[in-house]
Length: 225
Image (cartoon, rainbow, N blue to C red; front, side):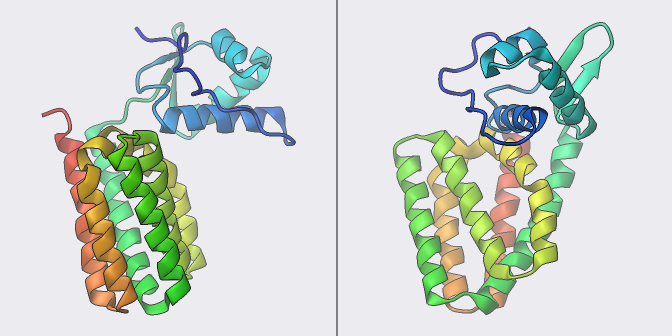
């Protein structure tokens, strides 16, 4: 059984100040979970986490309680805390909702995007391509998240952006294990999306984004086969 001992070197984020300590510990642990430095099913030992983060056990305990409430951590009587292991159904439901949100965001971005905004998308895409070429999965995942966040920003719909923010970290959680498999193809699809948005083609942008997110969903379910 895996425990928190032996986290990858450099994986533990520094706690930002100011802000309530329990909130900063929560954010640090959530980042470790979504990047899979702490893997699904991994045993979370309060004393070890406290040592890694340089805090007492109390804020760690409070953070684990919050993470449990939000479905990131399972608290098992007489056993302790464990990173939640998502079911295939959970992943499918989340990624289906993501497809709906992202497709609408792409349509709105095609209607609204300026030449400067297109330039930003191209810069992020180029950085993602470099990460893939260097086999830097963490960087590729971060750039993928930034690319999709930028499209959501260009959509200009605050409610849509708020809904997308609620699923963003879980999308990263599910995307990380397939990022290397998606590899260059994912960024080819991003280029196709940029072209559709640059042309102001709302219908094509919607279709490209829907196909793009569906590819990720399908690959997640096929990852262990």
